[in-house]
Length: 269
Image (cartoon, rainbow, N blue to C red; front, side, top):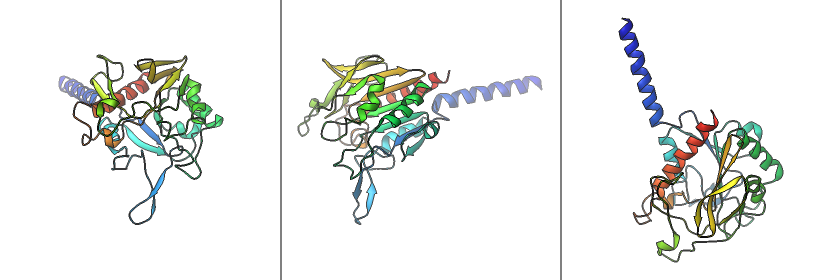
């Protein structure tokens, strides 16, 4: 009987280990900012609706495909419609701010400020994982948002690189080197019209295009910050319908999501 019980315990342990490997983000929450990005438009019925880089948006500008990747890895999705505070950030493991509004995108944009930035900084230092995805010069706010990013040694330049003409996809292509620390399973991705970065410690570049820093990571305390100048994992460029097959943006999104989970797991130890 003891052998049977021991065997059952071992089998349960193996099963739980396998489940954890399949769902490495189980028990985690990813929170998408709906405060600095608060865009609306009229639907076909004339009603004002939220749109642009939100979880449940199925159109080209939504994040429903990326949300599905989080789901597949066991991470619970949430959104934050208020300014970040120590109390509400405590409820999440990964916090993503994408495409902060300009005054042309929102009649009353919520700009980043020192109080909000300090709350986010303290949360990262305690082990939080922060994702900053800006946009190019015509489509996002920079002056206020850099209050936050510069706390981690990252400045968004507010330029617009990789301007693609029509379907000249190569104008937006980036080659990922083998064994990349964040994107180990992809070789070529597509990012257009993005802001480059200027960095200083504690930030370091994790992808350069010549002399231009495209992606950066900063380690502060137990936490991690990732920054890039475009929200390049929105549906249009990860759903496989628009880009030629050689561009592996979906695979990059999957690699990136696993990397975020691993940063959070490391912070817990």
